[in-house]
Image (cartoon, rainbow, N blue to C red; front, side, top):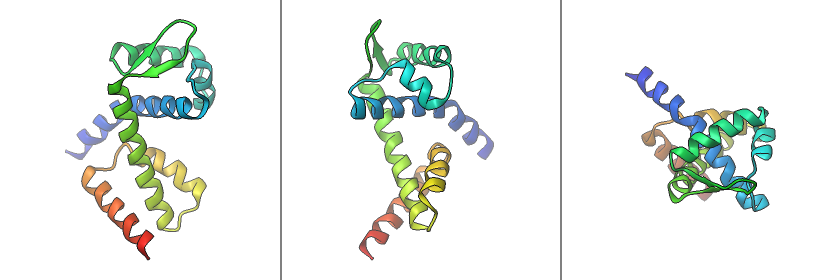
Length: 132
């Protein structure tokens, strides 16, 4: 049963990572471009472009030639949830005493695989650590 959960998480993590990255670029630079996405992910622009076309077909983004990429409401929702999951896991790892660099790297993978039940416990733990 757990193998199925892991396989399903792998199917969505690429989409979540792209949408979260696009949201971050829009917030920090005011635009999200293929060249920036490819550079940040360390991939070819053609590879990024292929994924962006898929995300557009799935209704997560809007894109016009020679313009920035924008998230649809559907894409914004996924990006926001993904960012929240990432932040919860990252903060949890920091609260355990993990250094920032390691916590950031580990949170990137864990955020896609952690259950909602575990995530709620992590969030609760983070809340109590702030109170102390």
